[in-house]
Every structure is written in structure tokens, then in C-alpha cells.
Image (cartoon, rainbow, N blue to C red; front, side):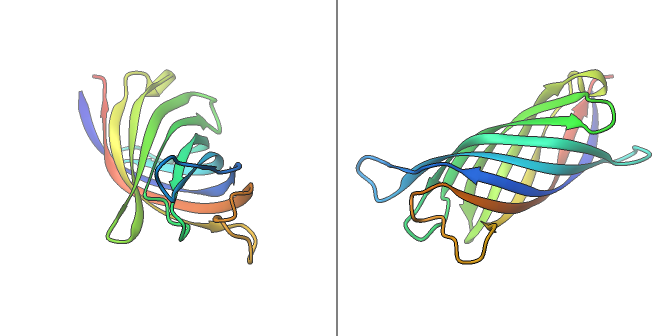
Amino acid sequence: MAQREVTWISGGFAQWGRQVPLRGSDHRTVGYEADLVTKLVVAGSESPTYFRTLFTGQDEVAPDGSVPRGFGAVRLEDMHTDELLIGHVDWFIEDGRDKGTLTVDGGTGPWKGVTGTVAIDLEFGTARSGDSVTTGEPVRVMGFIEGTGQFSFPD
């Protein structure tokens, strides 16, 4: 397996659904679906790859609007070839910042057999000023994700 450094940059919009209280906690859980454009730069490649990216999963929301943890599935579709890269993400807070570990589990075409992880930073907020993520009602949010990691490519 050839190891290569990768850089991930993406941005877009997400829809949070209705929130449900978590038993024995003041936190709530919410389902989300995010549509992003991702620029993936693989060291040694001639040019970056751009993907239509879908995240879908669940977040835990604290009363202050922070998201101490969450998880989701990730599907990236190459915007020029339609080849796929598939993975999952685990969200957490570290030093007051939203972070995640994105794990790549494989794909199709040139991404078949590719595995790896990317440590990502997330900056997000409501898409409209004045909206809140703490009302429990559906809300549109927008976010920016960036990070670096390493992928293993089959020989």
C-alpha cells in the first residue's frame, strides 16, 4: 500500500431536523444531511479532485448550541467521473473547537481499496442571521471543513 498525504477543504449547507430530548440529559439529538463541495488534494497527484459530498448522520446538541459529539456516513462523488469515495465521520469538541475524524473505507475506480483518515476542523453556524440551533425546530446551517491526513492506496 502506498501512503500519501491528503488535504481536505469543503463547504456547503446542511439541514438539521427536529430535535428530540435525550433521556437523563439536557442535551438533544438531531438528524442532519449536508451537501458540500469538497476539494481533495492527494500528494503526488497532478491536480486536486472535486467531489459532490453528502454527509448524513446524527448530532448531540447541548443547551448552548455546541455539538459535543456526533457521527455520520460520508459519500463523495467525483464531479467529473462520478467515481465514489465512501467513509464515515465522528464529531467531537476539543479545546472548545468542533473537530472530527473522517475515515475513508473505500470507493470505486481509482478510489477502490483506498483507506485512511483525515483530522478535520469544522466551523458552522445558521445559514440565516438570527436563527438558532437550540429551538428544537428544523434549521438550515452552513459549514466549512478543512483538514489533513493520510490515505493508503493499493499497489
